[in-house]
Amino acid sequence: MNRVSIERRVLWSLAILLAVGFILYMLRGVLLPFVAGMAIAYCLDPLCDRIQRLGLSRTWATAVVTTVFALIVLILLAVLVPLLYEQFVALAENLPEYIGVIADKIDPLLAEIRQIAPGATSPDLGSVAGTISSAMSWIGGAIGGILTGSLAFFNVVSLIFVTPIVAFYLLRDWDRIVAKIDSWLPPRHAPVVRQQMHEIDRTLAGFARGQATICLFLAGFYGIGLTAIGLNFGLAIGVFAGLLSFIPYVGSIVGLIVSVGLAYVQFDNWAWVAVTAGIFILGQAIEGNILQPKLLGENVGLHPVWVIFALLAGGALFGFLGLLLAVPVMAVIGVVSRFALGRFLASRLFDPDGADNPPTSLPPPPAL
Image 1 (tube, rainbow, N blue to C red):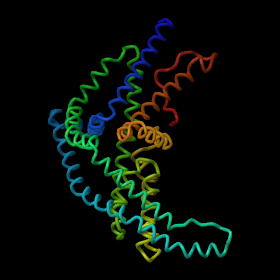
Image 2 (image 1 turned 120 degrees about the horizontal axis):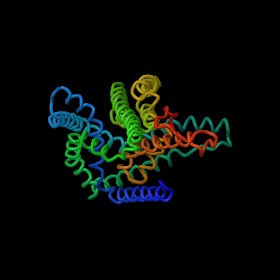
Image 3 (image 1 turned 90 degrees about the horizontal axis):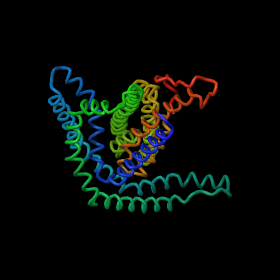
């Protein structure tokens, strides 16, 4: 193959990638139910394969898995959503008052600091409370406008009705779709492409399924723990902190700050404040020492810094859809980048005196 042909293929590949990216960006407002359905099908495919091996057809296995999954989701939504909504609304309404109480409690300490160091300046917590109150009012109005907007209504309706249909058909035809795509691979490069696709699947499955399990565990652990000690809005704060844990350290830090602040306002005993903080410390210890080594391991290949960057970039470009696509796209980029780096290190471009014969199979490189 001559150089002109190679350059033409590269240009065509780049043009196709740019066209696909542009189309996805233009259709980002209607892609959410399809991406959500694909994510559900991907996560449920191993369970469907196990049931199919028991003797059921693929259609019946898909029907059983999707029905049980839908029932579990509906039960959780029916039980948790009304309670969580009530607690979040009450927390938003009472937050300025809690800030004022914290300011009243801290004022004597600040007064002592001023006496010890007369030249020291301290923040006016009363004005801070007023600012937070105004901000919460603005955020509440903005959220209300978003929730009542036509696009939000369309997204909610599509998630409820379109996502289950998409998930069912993708899950039923998953193996056939994979086999069809595999038949399109050029025979010369098929082994290398299959190896990289297997690496992408391993990375993505290990992170997505493992991280989802960790988030659900932490949501239950924090919610039950804070509710058990009698903290106001403990269930809402705990569930929110646990679900937000898919962003490394953010969920636990936000939950710790909010819950300790509420405990400081609600309890007169510093021991209960320490117990509140201890719940999050214990949760982090369980996550770091037990859950992550067991569920994620050391070979997932996605560094927390890259995960945070991917989530922020995806959210800025595509909103909630970007949050769903951020980690899968970063997993693909990571695998392809490591493979390209390995091929480069094994080529004459890196070592002119070496053999220009890059292997088709490379040892796992360090995580990006």
